[in-house]
Amino acid sequence: MRTTAPIDIIRNGYRYVRLPILEGYDELLIDQRIQFGAPCIRGTRIPAESVACHYKAGDSVAMIVIGYGVTEKQVQACLDYVNAPVKAQL
Image (tube, rainbow, N blue to C red):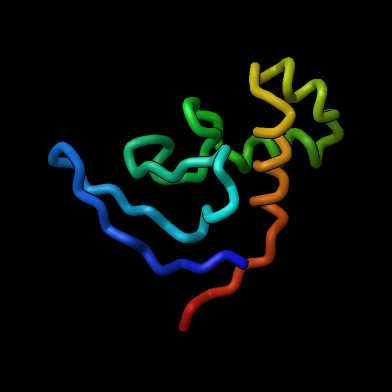
């Protein structure tokens, strides 16, 4: 289950927010300096939502892997993240 409670980290003068929302999604990263904090594939600037949109539009995983130059594991992490239910902390 994903939660939204942030954990602040300050490293080299930059403030990072590590969100438990990505627990279990090692292939993804949220960095407020990349794509305005949208979850992206680690080491790239490819938003998880873009990968999921291509898949929903009918592209196969193999086409996405070739098109973006990523691994199947990264594509699957994007699809799992976008389709996972959200549990908000109140």
